[in-house]
Image (cartoon, rainbow, N blue to C red; front, side):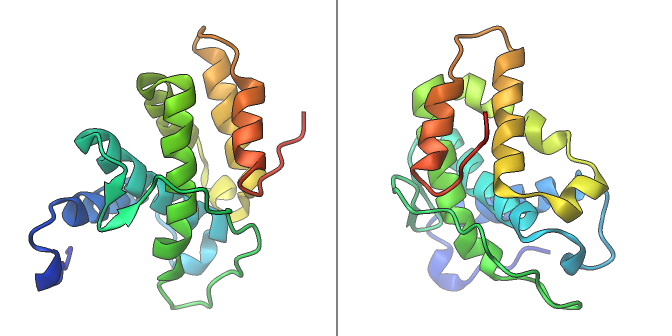
Length: 169
């Protein structure tokens, strides 16, 4: 069930964002509790839930939030307590969504779409429990390297480094 407040009814991107988040969540092995996912896993899912509707509507504003930002990615979000739904994923997803939006400008929209989705789809239950920001970015870089396109490793590393995520070479 997706609940949208009356104030959001005029902006379909609210529903797109929430639907995308639920779709990304359900394509993974379900945890018995949100606290089983690392904070990064929830934040990345939220970032993707901002990014894909932005790509669909071809505008960096989703659910009233601009992804055309340079927000730093929080690399130290604590694990949620058992039994709680971590609402901070919504807020912490915006910097990830902004980074993904910028990445698609650097590598091209289709390459970004594919690499991001493949990196998310490839996560196992163990990965979801232990994922760090650098781990996910490295997975995206690996997917970009597999697609046969131009080598954009350094550009993607630099983009995420400017947002606080250092990916070892």
